[in-house]
View 1 (spheres, rainbow, N blue to C red):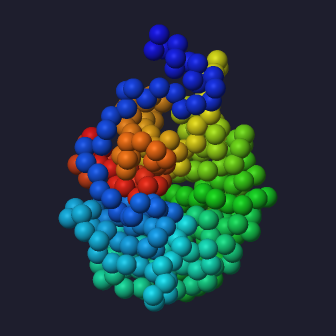
View 2 (cartoon, rainbow, N blue to C red):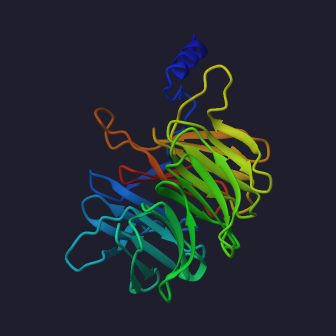
Length: 326
């Protein structure tokens, strides 16, 4: 009976049965009830950067559960931050409102650069040392922006808004996802397209593995898949590849492990999934904490990280709650 119910729900394009989903081992509220526009988690899981709906940007020490700094672009004004990120070494952080971006030192809390954007910012990925940022823009392009000196190093053109971006570990390639239903892998030196994957809807989320072999791309209420960056071949589906009743889910975040053999993926319905990349198999599933048991308390998972111990994970919800998972 339970299996039949799950199949029926899938047929009606719902999320499916999550009876096997685990609860967080602990959780922490980083914002007020209104939640967050954006969140990033440092690579070591020690800090979180939040763009809250009501009180702008803030940097949190997750180990001590304490807010360290309030980061806004103008004194006395709470910034609306659609994109935030940490550098891979965790020393720098980026906050971006639709018009401009600020580079911050995580150690001192001081701003190190302020720049106007060439277009409305929808997404951002910060490079090592805070030297460059890959920006997804509403003007149909992604740009590799020189944060230290200002100016555009490379422009990557789509036919629609670019709402998701990711840099490779060696920072030689970039992955972009756009409203033209395409995910494109680019050579950042030449600006040439290396691979392109077409989906059936707006591409919400993209991610690249540290070893450069794998890419994740997902469409809104459409397919979510991992593919080979050398060939463009689909390796496995997280959803949308079912032959009988294709599931129509939205994935809002994704992150590969440092050794590239695991993938964390966060869904719009508050579900977090851990996948074995080499086998294409689901390992474990969790549900993010809801602020209240009843009412309109749904949360989407907008940021993810692997814990330093290798046996824990972190997931940030759009409701402003950080979840620790085991």
